Length: 121
Image (spheres, one colour):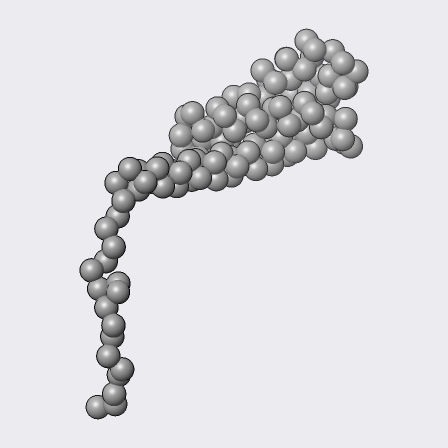
């Protein structure tokens, strides 16, 4: 597997699109399994893996040692999982803000209450 990955990496760096596709197909299942361990959501895992592979493609020329490809891919997948999690959290907050805009939360009745000065007992 390592030797095949190294050959595919070399060809992909040279611009061989077929090698790049085969490289991604070879590692997709493992990358997806890694993502599922982090996000436990099929859609988020697919998004994270897709973003990770796009990042790998964009930075393929920066990989110094081919034997480190797998750890680099996994680290990229994990980073993309965190990114997807933050994106989902921001989306939830936006939904809450929109819901609040349509149904404003009433002010707490004692918010404007003038509290008497506390005196020692």
